[in-house]
Length: 254
Image 1 (cartoon, rainbow, N blue to C red):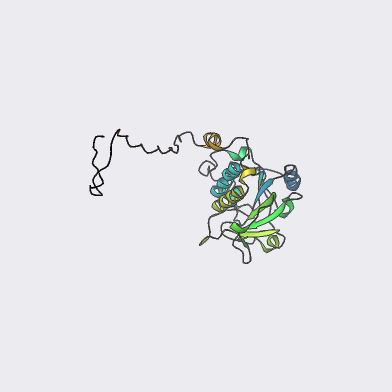
Image 2: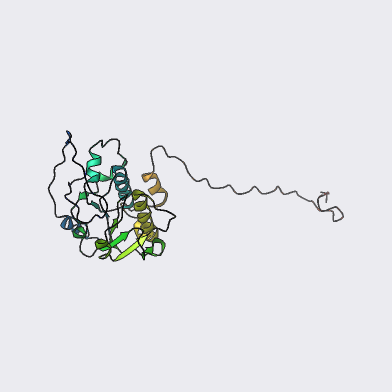
């Protein structure tokens, strides 16, 4: 999926951002820089708001996965810096189509020159990466309005962004997850910790009704309620002979 804005040079990346001259293809992406902070600010009128910021992402597969997750968890907007994702997406958008729910048609994906300049007013900057001194995600309390920044697949978040963060958290895994998986885990953690409010993300339904609306068309499975054990039949006018062994019961007529 192609973004709505073609980003310029990334001033915040710390990884290798050298881009070789690539022959222009028949698909052209033209755009003009937009006031991303003003755009995002219009979406923070509600008590809760969630934005994702990506530092120079590399692969369309990860970005597509993040857009799909954003649709599932009610993200308000996704911002990214750098040109690598855009150049990779040009080579064939169909083969990178991970966002099968087309969340990108509802959630803006915006290329910007600075993630810091894109953070709306009254929104906390939360960096998510394996950074020394960071807070484990299970112990973190999510703010109502948050702008979560994730580093690239082959690098990390720039120190200048981390220094301005309201909090830095990490997922305590053995080894690092890929970018899209990290975003999914972060968003689920936020949902799980505020499930009562988040249960009405895009609708007022919940429970089985929400499951039926969200599941795949081919999914018709259900949890079966176990049947109660059958009661033994009652034998009228019976008695137990106490002289019998423990393993034998003798029924005698009254």
